[in-house]
Amino acid sequence: MSILTSVTPTGTEEVRERVQRFQEATSRIRQEVGKVIVGQETVIESVLIALFVGGHCLLTGLPGTAKTLLVRTLARTLGLKFNRIQFTPDLMPSDITGTDIIEEDTASGHRSWTFVPGPIFSNVLLADEINRTPPKTQSALLEAMQELSCTVRGHSYRIEPPFFVLATQNPIELEGTYPLPEAQLDRFLFNAVLDYLPADDELKVVDLTTVNRTAEADVVTNGDEIRGFQELVRMTPIAESVARYAVELVRATRPNGNGDGPDFVKKYVNFGASVRAAQFLVLAGKARALMHGRFHVAYEDVRALAAPVLRHRVLLNFHAESDRLTTDDIVRRLLEWKTTPRE
Image (cartoon, rainbow, N blue to C red; front, side, top):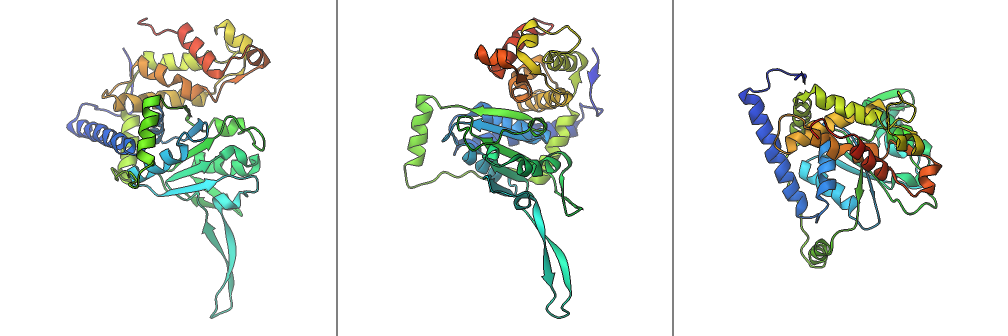
């Protein structure tokens, strides 16, 4: 069985220690976030995977599902610089990237341009209600998300890693919103959905938030260690058969592929997922494997992450809308159709 990996050897003592520290840090981060956030374990895992991959995450949820609180708590636990932008219809690109201003030297009277950095220069950036601002302002994030830089008046400014965009959007309020462009959606590793909590968890939330004492999370790690974790994720090996399964799963979402896709995709899908989806599916599988105590990627990792990776990349047509099918329904059918070799 061929193994796809970028580093050898994988069994050294140093690597084992790094894997052990990764798992300890991940466990502690979850524990600290759990002091403030009740439930939502799947979403927390998705956000951490995106962080350790070096990607960005879109959080979709109804009002009051603790999207903003989750991001703020996570940033504190990670020991990273945190900034929040409240997206509104009148927000300008310069409000995100920063702008040049003219400053005058009081002694010489000489005037010069000075760059004032915007909130994008941070480690964790919360783009709150990102779909409430026009596409021109939304696109101010594109360069930063892909290139870790932003350009103002022809000058490029570097954003120091780790850089992590967490964007929230409300799926039910359509008036006054601007759907994210497909090019921007494709840059998000995950689209994680926050749903209502079970009754017992909701009771815990009430108990936590209706008293004088406020729960706070402690710092667990820092930016340098997180960059090391991101390197470790890319060192994790993946069998060629598992990587091929991920690629074939992504290719099956394309209705105009090689003709070997399922009939329901050809009927309900307008556009399938891009190559970036396969890259993110493999990288996310590596991070999930490490978080679950394995130094290799399994089929279960790929299948578990298919929905958050694909749900914002597969565009459905009017047949799906008339049959009241969502992208999650298509992904679920796809996983039933594309079984693993062992199954």
